Image (cartoon, rainbow, N blue to C red; front, side):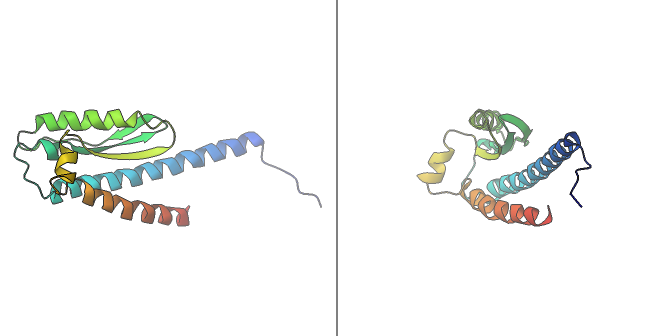
Length: 148
């Protein structure tokens, strides 16, 4: 008895596209979770004195899918950090333009002096958040792979 196809190629394509979209949504939700955890880590465990609130207000993230921002975190004002809010979101969006393919999580501290505080002053701005993301993302994506 020969094998016969009973499902049309159109229905197979439709199913595959639906599955891809479903999996992309799950991945984006995982990235949102990791992004939120990174923001909390950066704002909570930054061991520097943020006199104006700008540096902590500039911490946030964006998620980019195929060159388009699909989610932006809030950049709430802390203390008098209105400049931080604006600079953080602006910097995150400028970095998003570099990624035209795939799904990308970008976590930023958007003040121009953030790298100086981190590298030269030897304070934790986002380094602990980066370590957290490097630990969480592979673990969560591996778990996702098991269930899908």
